[in-house]
Length: 173
Image (cartoon, rainbow, N blue to C red; front, side, top):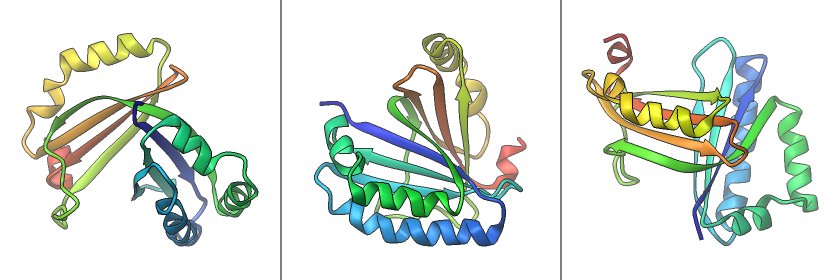
């Protein structure tokens, strides 16, 4: 079975609501971690004026994901609490390719490290991914590059790109 990746991009209307959403997610993370097939959860806080939060959940398979976050009363109640704080745009993705080294669970990224995360709506997902693979050097050959992961949505309509950079100044190189 292939690993399933769940992305959810949340948008809130203030830093306060963003902080409340994060607190609710931290509480829910303990519940998810106890579910069979759970592999990991990463949450990024947007630093822009849209007060976004990006959530990446990893599951051993689609069946494990469906069993853990399907239409149970617990999952429905959790979604309702989160939706009081922000608007989410969820989707299931599979990993397409990865470049560079990832920060391991044992080490921590430097305080100055920054993640650039984009979720693209695409008309021709496979063509977009092929072009990305061919031209990835434009992004990865720049000073400060550490790693990049690209994921394709199961519905064929989106691509998520995650890039780790040494610091925010390296984004401008």
